[in-house]
Image 1 (cartoon, rainbow, N blue to C red):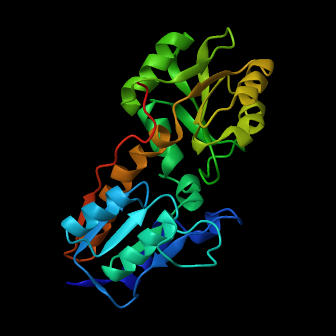
Image 2 (cartoon, rainbow, N blue to C red; image 1 turned 30 degrees about the vertical axis):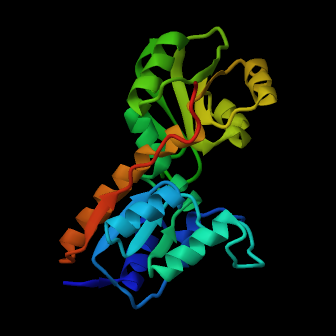
Length: 263
């Protein structure tokens, strides 16, 4: 049975409801025709030239991303800016783009639950302490406490990273908070939830000072590194949903180069 872009929009809105998105965010269908037939879906973290090229090569009809293709307001749609040039190219190739951002961060089974699972956290809750597992951030405990060096190696291994940045607080790692992407705005939430260690990305120097002052181990596992794992999970869930409902569209995962590299 064939499926349309509007059907993908409906399914994605059920998997990652827009009500969970932050007010400043931009989620949903960003480019494309609602009535377009979809045979191939490509899932990716970012809407980039690399991903758009793969979509064209794979004959994808829609790209489903985590980061919004359109984030800030656009006043001109020309090829003078690389972002709008990509949007024009997607429209020219008739490739739709759908984005699930902070709603995918917050939903149960989304970015932060995938991260918590990879780190083998148990008794996982939201930062608020309830068990609804909706909202930014997750907190759980390791089966056995570890020192920060060993835990940092574990983070590197499960996220397939060449490096992480560590701010040690001279305490064992046991109760761990995670927030994929750029999560330093939620350091106080992690501290109030009782975390001794916080794993996130995009840590700045003064953020590190703040964590050390609050006596919390901090690991910057990079923005991209903490969010890439959700792409495979999203693709698997979407493929299962389509199969259950009798749709024949294929769901593929883009190959994305690590944006920031250590030389």
